[in-house]
Image 1 (spheres, rainbow, N blue to C red):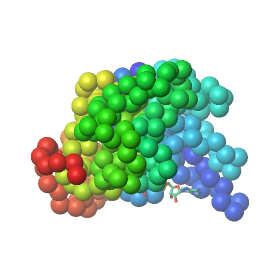
Image 2 (image 1 turned 45 degrees about the vertical axis):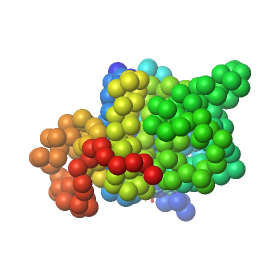
Image 3 (image 1 turned 60 degrees about the horizontal axis):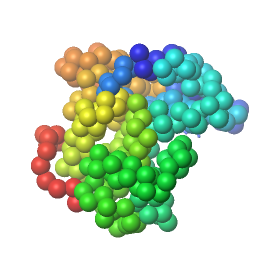
Image 4 (image 1 turned 60 degrees about the vertical axis):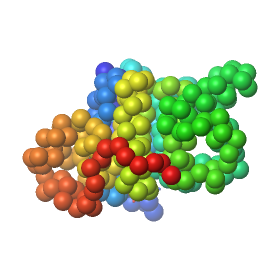
Length: 269
Ligand SMILES: Nc1ncnc2c1ncn2[C@@H]1O[C@H](COP(=O)(O)OP(=O)(O)OP(=O)(O)O)[C@@H](O)[C@H]1O
Ligand SMILES: [Mg+2]
């Protein structure tokens, strides 16, 4: 068992009123597994991811439950202890790819950022590791890209830079929060292929978040369906897709936009 989340809850206090964004969420993941979280907008997917990463630590937000990563409770670690895990053992790709890159920093530097924090390497060693991660993330010509700026790249390429930055420390768990939502269908399919490759080559477990059950089905074997902060059903994705128990899940299946088959083709422009 790599990740064992038990009864995770996130409660905000908004003008004195409690609001439960995540309600008793539990999930177990093995090493190298790919699991999906699907749910409508506002169902608590990002909040769950942020809480798992230990990113919600404010007095007006109560996070309870346990998130055991290789036995250590991420929710109970001190900030300093947690920092040793973040990026190195588990890593997150945030939902907003366009705002997650620093426009004033060259691509190479951004990919290297967590190496600077976690490892003592020479500039040459850092560069080699960054180029390796960029290649793994499916970026063509890493050497050329290394010196470019974010604005010179397409949305798909920027998302791949985010993936490279998340992978540079070889985390065992990658949390990908809607990593393809802002991208068109062809590029989306290519990014999914890349994530699948990374999982196969590196054994990286992936917690993949999406509002689109079709995308989840293309990548994950297992899925949990969230609604209003709660898990309403979970299981093998094929089963959930074929025999959804909840009307809500049926709606998630029915409401997804018409899509092309999610495999190969085209260039990442
Ligand atoms: N700072 C905050 N204070 C109070 N409530 C918040 C805050 N941030 C988010 N929420 C609420 O928490 C709930 C869960 O939000 P979350 O961002 O996790 O949804 P999501 O499933 O990721 O949605 P999306 O698909 O749109 O990304 C929402 O109802 C949201 O309005
Ligand atoms: Mg979200």
